[in-house]
Picture 1 (tube, rainbow, N blue to C red):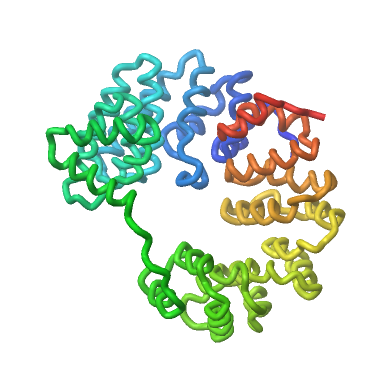
Picture 2: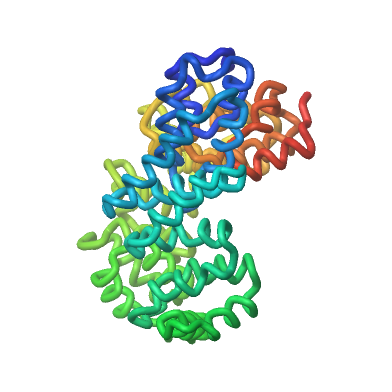
Amino acid sequence: MAYRLPLTAEAFGDALRQGLGRAVQHLRFHGDTEVRAELLEAVTRNLAYDPQSEGTRGVWLADMLDLLPDANRYWAAVKAAYARAAASRVADPWDVAHLAQLLRLRAGRGDAAAAEVLRAGSVDLPLRMLELIGPELLLLDGLEALPALAARFGADGTGEGGWLFAVASEKFGSGPVAEILAAAADPRARAYLGANREADVATPSQRGGWVEFLAELDRKPRRSTSLAFARRATTEELSLLVAAIDAGGPHLELLLHAGRERLPRMPTRLVELATGDGPVARAAIEALVQFRTPENLALGRRLVEAGRFDGVRLLGAAGDEEVAGLADRLPAQGSAEMLHHIGMDLLGLCEGRRQLVAPVLIWMVETTPCSFCRYNALDRLLALGAVPAELAEEAIHDSNSETRALFAQDPIVP
């Protein structure tokens, strides 16, 4: 799916949402005249698909704005948006973190007003926002800013704000962090240090069995609960899990997640569940992958034939030619969640295969909303010696810093 510069406004907006380097190329060669609304949205909102893993794109966007002869309108919008978001106290925390990073970067470019907007807006932020903003304040003002931040979190001594503690320790060293907090005049900052030290040395809870797992699912019906059980389960407990999947009942999707690996036998209902709809069907397919049978391969083919691309996970036993042929069937558009799921499934399917599957990986580079998945696809293409010159050039400007580094150091093209 080749692209052509200049991009249309719609294509530029799509590139910003995906974090594709073509957005940078457009600004470099054609400016912002036709894409101002799209760029304004990108600098005032965090458009990353999964900001919890991808983080914010402030560095990428700040460098983009540096390409423009006059970016004042965008920096003014960032300042105003941060002030509004901070005052509202109900804004998306990742939008606030995104704006804070841009303000810190702008301050580093000599804009004192940006620094003041960041400091002033952070004074009364809710703690869930402050934990994301705190690292930017530390990068702006240094370790000396930590005691005041810690005092906000240390008021109840619960150790809330542990991520900020970890970031500060990584940036400045655990010794200096502990030293400055221990010497803080505010007892709340010292309480914060104590709570986080206790969290660091806390002993793990004892391993619970099957009954404890079911009770934990009732209390915390999360995928992480299922995966934690799966890692520690005995063979006997996994047999009970198989019986529970066959019986159905509450938390079926989470039971299936717990059964993604090491099941002693295939639950009799697993194929039936996989042919259904929704999250339960996808979880059932994930559990089926461990059973490489001709029947499951045939099921995967039927699902793909019917437009159910989650079925590609079951094609592990298919040959490289068959996998390569998927490139002509994969959707060019769809919801971000759907495209992300398909991309993750394809990454696993293409592992260890020949250059023949390159078109599938190229589809993923062009389509996935996740910058980390795109990095992994490009890394595989690079290993295969199959990166098209156009994608290699674009990757140097990608929103993902690992992708930029990969191609800046070794921009291999055929």
